Image (cartoon, rainbow, N blue to C red; front, side, top):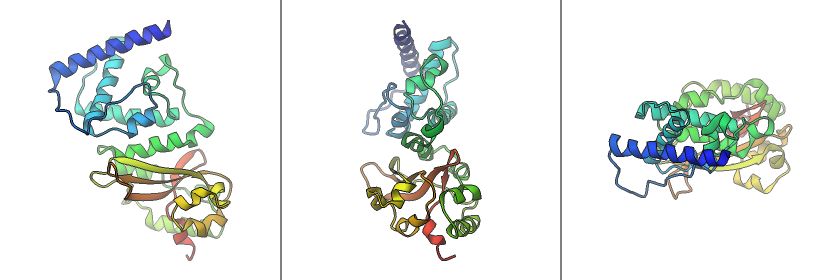
Length: 264
């Protein structure tokens, strides 16, 4: 019965969206930038693999239509409201640990559950977090400030004297003027997910991280998910490269280039 009702609801939502497209906006010319999306796929995949503004607009408009079909309440559809919807979707996607888009939007009527425990440190959760930086309308300074490490985070991952040296380095260099950000045209995310214990033991993933990690791996304490990532243009492998996104104390924090604090 639920599947039948869900199918009917989706058809209604598509009807709303079709009417909106027909009467409220011109249909854009097809181009290679338009990829479309599948609502049954993981929200991480949907939100991180958009081809551009058109895809993002399609997602947000679909959400408006779906919600309207659920409770028969029409909401204004605008560029500004679309941006808000996309930001809310990204946050909810992180919390869900990568639920399907349909489950995420359905909320309590669907099957999505907030991520807890290990799920919050999953590869899907990391990808969802980093995908926020690809949104040209996001506040990348605020997003970066939200993941800066506290002294207790650093000491939970690195031993002394490196930990104290890193705290001093980050207090000096990781200021409000620092922002993780792709360059113009860099719309895709490349990511390498590993664990600090694996890097410490010299796993194959160590070669995917900057060489400086070979110098600091002896200082790793415990076992924490760690990510290296790049923002790249479609089809490219070179781009804006970052390292040191680590899940510790229940949240993702950014501890870049720890080897630079070895001689402090």
